Amino acid sequence: MISRVMSAELAEHAGQRVTIAGWVHRRRRLKSVSFLVVRDRTGLAQTVTAAGDLPPEESVVAVTGTVTAGPQAPGGFELVSPEIEVLAEPCAPPPFDLYRPVVGAGLPTILDHAPVALRHPLLRAPLEISAASVAGFRETLDRLGFTEIHTPKIVGSATESGANVFGIDYFGRPAYLAQSPQFYKQAMVGVFERVYEVGPVFRAEPHDTVRHLAQYTSLDAELGFVRDHRDVMAVLREAVAGMLESVRHRAPEALALLGVTLPDAPTEIPAVHFTEAQRLTSSDEPDLSPDQERWLSEWALREHGSEFLFVTGYPMSKRPFYTHPDPDLPGYSNGFDLLFRGLELVTGGQRLHRHDDYVRALADRGEGTEAYEGYLQAFRYGMPPHGGFALGLERWTARLTGAANIRQTTAFPRDLHRLTP
Image 1: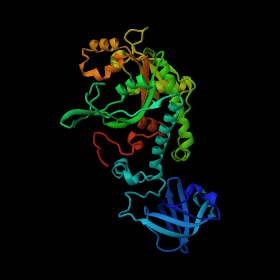
Image 2: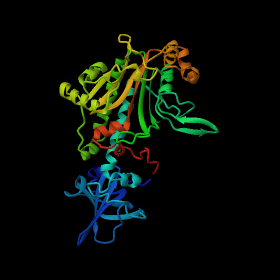
Image 3: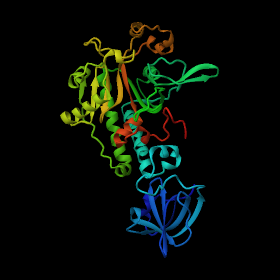
Image 4: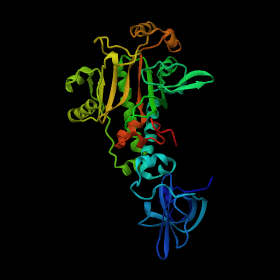
């Protein structure tokens, strides 16, 4: 590899001759001197050279020069007396100027040209925040004794929920892209007690909205030996706090660039039971509408100073068959959603853990056990009380950054209309 110094490290090498490498971000020619701004993974570095031909924007270059203080340069230091080596030149100009501080293109153009458009610092920043969030999720759950697992994304049955699934031809047999790692992560509680996964999930739901994707990244966790769903909520609170701290530590430049103010994770996130949420929103519907989620989030901020709100105890009729019922309130569940800035961000709860309870729950919904034999195998051999949750990474990042459309926080979104690039 090229022995190089990163742009963010120039101040540590004042007076030394070093090599930087990256993309030509911008060229500026004056009468007697020219400036070449180079972009690498840590930021921008300026090179001062004699007037003359300069490689075009987005050329890949290695520049060797002497580090000198430059008050007008990014970071306060620049390279002088440079030797410029062009490693690769673009075949065409980018679809819009990447050096301009404001993105000069609409979302369709950005998505159509994502491999180059995402080089713009403003478009890259949400992805930096996303990566920092995942790092914080992993760090927190590792600290809490969880084991990371990796489960199949091709499954033999489409039985987990009512959501539509993508069917595929699997060597002449029907198969499906997984809607969730739910069944597998429950089974792995019987192996490791506490597990998590970060991976893609697929939902063939015909939603064409600013908050839905056909493929997204799910941050899943499942833990055994819980008393009820409140133990799961406590772990989720720790995960959210860890993700926020990681973003604060790992992506401060991205936050500053986007003007993002991170929320605080309360020591205890306020919670309301679904029946109370109905009373507050004057509703008798068995689920919360987007408008009601927004209203409840505003209420939580006003009454509790929290941008997060748990809604617990959803009706069993609106929860998957594996959800544990509330033993004290028939018809309601030990399930929850976490609302964040007006949007449902996380779904979770306590699960059934006894084999006979699964057989009964399926029978109550008019189903037999045949299609679930692989899933029920774990419960046939003894499983502890357990529960878990799933958090959508792209929604999380969109809420953090204030993005109007979830596609702004997804590198290569897949939805009703988009299958490339």
